[in-house]
Image 1 (cartoon, helix red, strand yellow):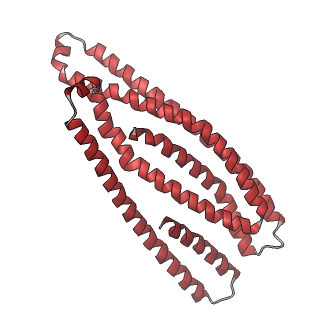
Image 2 (cartoon, helix red, strand yellow):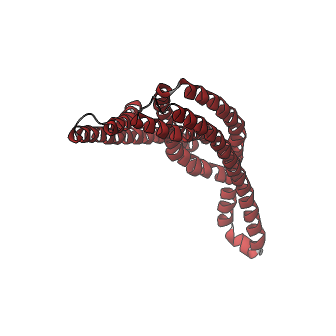
Image 3 (cartoon, rainbow, N blue to C red):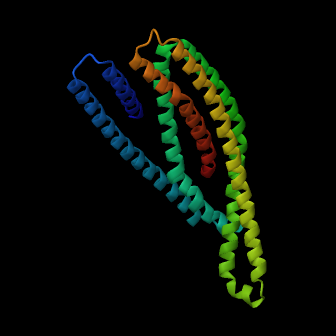
Length: 276
């Protein structure tokens, strides 16, 4: 289904190229583009329905299993696992399973298929572009490999540091009368601030590493854009104006698509920490 959608998207761009080149009446191209648009809209609707249904089913199964495991757990389980950790599993980690992981997975698959379609079009223009793209993919893989391991560990630390915040909050609410009697409001407030700062530091470290990773990918993408642009300009005499415009459009979009693909694949691996 996802492959059919991406094939229809590439077909719509090729149809526009043929429209610019001419050869038939305007009505012929308008009707063809209209049919392609209706087909793409139908595929998008089906894709959204299928992905949403699959996400709801998998989320329900995982949540019920986790809930059953907690309800039927022995008392020793609750002595070893504080309330804040359990709340974190049922809130933040469940949100990752319900929202972020399905979205990242679907987006990553879409981008892989988009890159395949773009690569086929650019390969028709010049095999040198494909060679440059393979070199770029190898460099991006090296950068991604250096990013995903520390990012995954930082995300795990972030998940661990959120549990004490929830535990401290629940315990403070439960013992608020005792805290007021002994005048310990300032001490508990300071503890809460320390826990929040510890969680914020891991969150800040994660986004700093992500920003550096994105900047590296953008620099590598700029190299590919330069090379493909030079190749397309050099081969302008053998290419038609319409096909040259399509090739330049794909040459401009391909580096960013590769960047998004590697970024979402890395984010998907990081988000799978919630499954642990």
